Image 1 (cartoon, protein in one colour):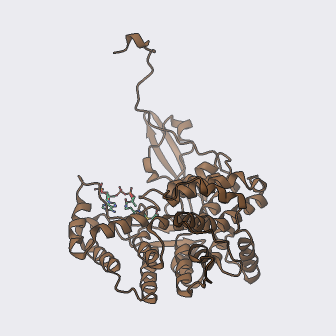
Image 2: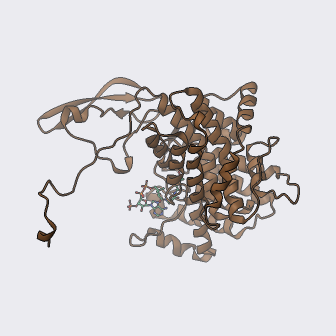
Image 3: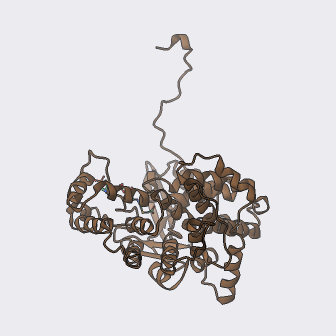
Length: 432
Ligand code: CMC
């Protein structure tokens, strides 16, 4: 970031304060308010961070008005079409697309970290069989911090990279174990001859009783879903990982914090919520009723999979997801899936409705992903888990970037206090 010579002037009572304006390579300039409190004795107020840049970053850029998403400068549509998840993971972590040798070394490094410590299996047995798999993920990924002590010196770049590889590699294994545990099936070990997406499908759907060959169309779709979810700038879970990491916390524990944040229905939990909503709507003739409900301020119902804090245009990931949805359902002979028809009708009506048009509410990445995942055989409760598997590389890339940033400080927001002013303690016998 560079000071562009422009300054912002603010009058606070009698005081006049000048703040430098900083310029990135793309996107709006930012007013550097770091000295504001020292110079003028006031804080800025921005609940939900709608106008606050919390850090500088070189990883991902979003232009929400134009519907643009770039990873290290490359548009998501091109990465989804021409690249794959392993390559995009390398790009996010190292800043450049790998050459053949770098790619081969990286894939080998990830592949050889996919097994988990055998003792970790015992953690699963502590959960009820009907536990939500995101609850299991929070617990088991947090527990990794008690296993891999040789990769927790966050000031050692090598150890940081080892922790990053471990997290990216072990997430599919843990996710599949969470599913197998809930289904009462034996855990399936990873296979080193399969790629990342194939191996995940294998650990999810193989059983010891018969051989399993991943369907190439479904493996490609899985890979694309992972690619589309790999990173998304300073969203709630990534900011959670950065905030947890800013205190110098254990990397595995930081990712567990990110998983907890992702779980909410306003964030990663939306893909599960979309499917539950479509099932509740049930048929095309009830779409108008639900669109009306979504517009009613007295009704907490929202159209899940619609709207985004940053995109005020079609989410570019949703476009690729919609294409993938048609491909997968076609390959599985499920192109007449009534839920897909319902989703398309809902999208059509909402996109023509004044409320959604005026508020610029478009389908987001989660709108179509659930339909694909359901057709592939994933239970609804696993949808957000898949998001967590894919987003782990984004989380670790952002966490590494934060630790390397010389400007990094512990994250410590301030507040506008609205509570009681100082008062004298009241003994219990004098209280009303
Ligand atoms: N249905 C109906 N109304 C909506 C919706 C929706 N899905 N989304 C936003 N609005 C309305 C909202 O009521 C508000 O109206 P008003 O200005 O009259 O008060 C206006 O649009 C702006 O919404 P907001 O809640 O102030 O915006 P936000 O930026 O804080 O929230 C959001 C963004 C994604 C949380 C929200 O759009 C939402 O709840 N969407 C449904 C959940 C969802 O699909 N989440 C997945 C996000 S994409 C995946 C990810 O990155 O995690």
